[in-house]
Amino acid sequence: MKYFLSISIVLYKTPVGDIEKILASLRNFSGSYHLYIIDNSPTNELMKILPSDLQFEYIHLPRNPGFGSAHNVAIRKAQLLGSEYHLVINADVKFDSDILTPMLAYMEEHPEIGQMMPKVLNPDGSVQRLCKLSPTPSDLLLRRFSKRKTADTNNRHFELHNSGYDRIMFVPYLSGCFMLLRQSALREIGLFDERFFMYPEDIDLTRRMAERYETIFFPHVSVVHEHGAASYKSLKMLIIHIVNISRYFNKWGWFYDPIRDSLNKRTLDQFSNK
Image 1 (cartoon, helix red, strand yellow):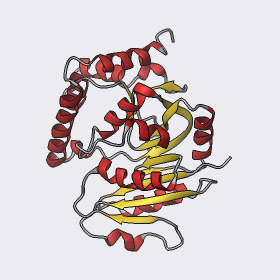
Image 2 (cartoon, rainbow, N blue to C red):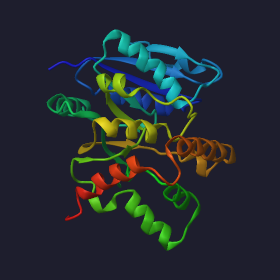
Image 3 (tube, rainbow, N blue to C red):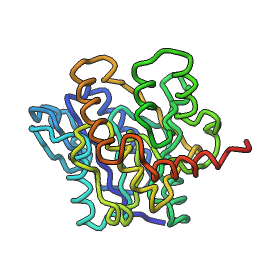
């Protein structure tokens, strides 16, 4: 079965090695796809290292509108072309086999699914805990700033450790490093909220998708993510993180958020008897 798949990768002063790895990974897909490379770097120097035998559309946005806004440029172009599915993927993700075909086949079989994420691994093979509950302010504050045992207990709950990460399951917050999205669903719920320059855009999009569609963790295939955690290394990125997370809670509510509560209850009920 053929699918019209579009893919977007956003670059910003991205290491050449990362670009080479993600492009090599995409070659494992047995189907065809339309690739958008959106470069938010100040110059278009990265275009010079892109392989000449690869078909893609290069878009340079030197004013750097942010992660979600850049992907939106590609998603809108893909929708005009009739794309049925769109993959948002980070340049620091890699995979050695055709993981996209089984994921697309599963989405074709289940039209209620609007978004999927595979199992995501660290370079050492350990699981990245990227399936999360829809966050409360305390979830993110404890996760970022506290090193106490209570924070670790809360984080294990927030990251759904009790699920085992070994089953297909509904998750209301899936990572933006790999988002396989149904275009018809995006037309209904909208694209990335461009008020968020960086960080909560994946929380927001998955949440809106989860209100109307299934947002699914699919552990039968996996990718490797060389996660940078920039806000832990840079004061500037930490400030950007705090500002944008504040915008997120201003949008949805800091303490009273019945939709969040409903999504999280549904998630936890899946494995309450596990």
